[in-house]
Image (cartoon, rainbow, N blue to C red; front, side, top):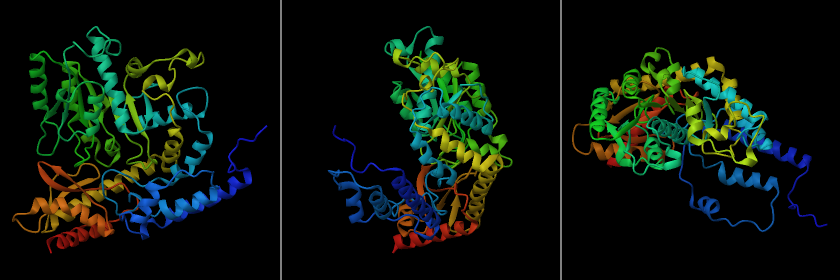
Length: 481
């Protein structure tokens, strides 16, 4: 009988040696992150190696693969591991999450369901996340996802199905054709994943209403009331309102309690996008901003953001677990599990059938930090955002553009009052990134070009904030010469 195994299949000793080498490479990379540039463009030669290589005809030894990864992959990070990465909402990886990733891969289970470690640990992790942010948790009331984008799809699908069943029909069975258009309400600061989910679920972009915001970039609830009334009068079917517990642009938290009142009055599903900011509720003095979050029907949050769980790990939390099950449960005969219990399988609550073991890295990260460590991390990073805001307000050449609520500071460089400020602030992030000493991103807030710094790294210091402002000045000077 021919041995069809690849020549590179390794015995235990080979794997131990390669594993030790991999661990040394990882440790060396993480230990040296702060001493390297935050980010630099990938040189042409490495870009060609990464993009253009051919699949080898015969298998290669593990040691060679590790050397290639060390030489060609690790030198070109996104930058989010560095203490002076202030872009987007991407955290450094928690070391506990990094360490257990190989263990999850070694088991390589599908966490769709069944009586093994993955699903049981996921129940605990989901409960922990709900408890951290004060969201009511019933057994089965949540699941881990690839990220908040998928969590949002799950929550809005549950909302859509609940609205249809309340009206006497089944959206899964009949589709949406011939029914009054379902309408969802978000603000202009609402995350793009809300719009993508609505489009994917067949609601149509035209039926996602953009609610105005106030001067602090929070939902204008009086405008929401008026829009719902207008849509009802027009024969449409308002079914969901989505508030933000920390927007990506400025970190603003919508008036969640007032939105919950409107949702209750009109029977709307109340969804909260807390992908980035929900954990901000743990910061000292922050909880009043989040009043009403506990009244939501669903909440999306991302452990791979503020908590530093290695990507990707999101979470959908639902007040009523049956709502998601009604939207997704489809159990073929070959997956019937008589021992599944009342909750069934996780695969019944979302679109994924084969689900990775996300719970292990999440459990490790949360356990490594502990509740006190999580609170400390949130306080530290939120404090940095407030400190930068104070530095901006004290500087004659900067301008603060929004109140600081979470760990994002939105501001602009304003060395003068003349023309060209919009173009200058649009160009500054790229120029700062290319210098390699800090990483900053831009956005538009209130119709104007905006610089935004997001703080998630536990090792960022106030000295790093001064470096950031100096880098902006130097980048702007290079753009103006």
